Amino acid sequence: MMSDLSGLRRDYEGESLAPEHTPDDPMALFDHWLEQAIASEGLDANAMTLATIDGAGYPHARVVLLKGVDPDGLLFYTNYQSQKGNELAHVAHAALVFWWPELQRQVRVEGRVEKVATERSDDYFASRPRKSQLAAWVSQQSVEIPGRDWLKERLARFEQVYADKEVERPPHWGGYRVVPHTMEFWQGQRSRLHDRVRYSRHDEHDVTWHRTRLAP
Image 1 (cartoon, one colour):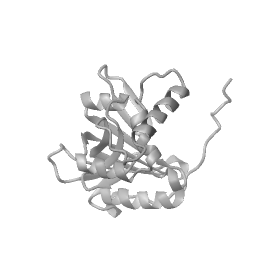
Image 2: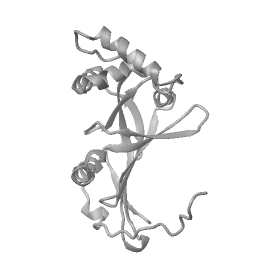
Image 3: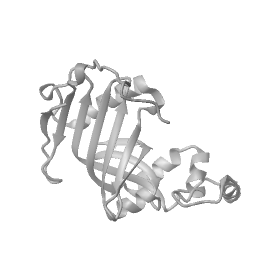
């Protein structure tokens, strides 16, 4: 039986966040918050919840790692044939959520999703540890398997294949970019009167970000 959670709460007391004191470009604010999160949260700072939608309209969420930020959006890498890869192939939109408890901050991102250039996927794959490179070949992500022995046998096979050479990037593995049309920054405050600032664009051709304060 689950314990009673009704009394489990904390009162926040974060820094002030107001639209008039934020940059015009939300990516600049995100970069600043991410730097602070890396300093306070350590290796978990780039963990983000990724939500996608299947063909029947059902949402699916999981935690993945942010692996890059550029002026156009936020990057992550995965198996294109995984459940999320198949969902993105049919509905190329996603939502991201970052939660940084030490800073009492949350960031929400919504936007369209595109594959990154092949060269960028190649470069990132080449930077990964060799064991992680092999794992990209071993794991048929989201497919049912009989047990861990199946993984170990596949790993042994690919270790033989690439015993005397560099591991090449599998064609079914690479990067995605979430190109935001909405970014929301949440800063915890006392008495649940939190600060929320939302940046939005009217459509993907709109180059101007519009800022507003939201009720907590």
